[in-house]
Image (cartoon, helix red, strand yellow):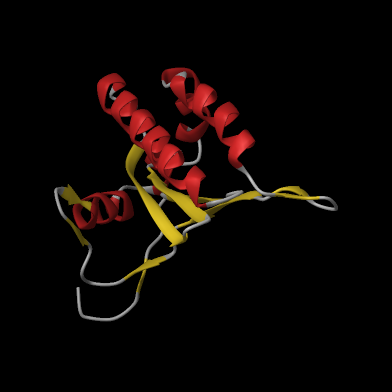
Length: 142
């Protein structure tokens, strides 16, 4: 692969959820709950979840970011990791609320369509996973 942007045709899905918190005091408990879920994911060896991260925007906003092998893997996460439901219910009490729009919480999902040449992420071989998925015949990816 040469440096630059490279189109890929893979079933990999990225999910980002933004949490707008009521105040700075909600950030640490939210991060702890994220870590609780990731420990449970590791213990259950949830298939399909490739990697996740907790990202900070500012003291009152954060994101969970996850990479999935395909869209079908995401619904199984809730049943394989029941602590996720408990954590999701707890976070609602920490969210900032707009009278017109409700809790400051949103989520997006999108398919991976291109990658750069350098896909290093500590102990996760993302490059190998993308290349393997890209090279697999389309019928096998469904």
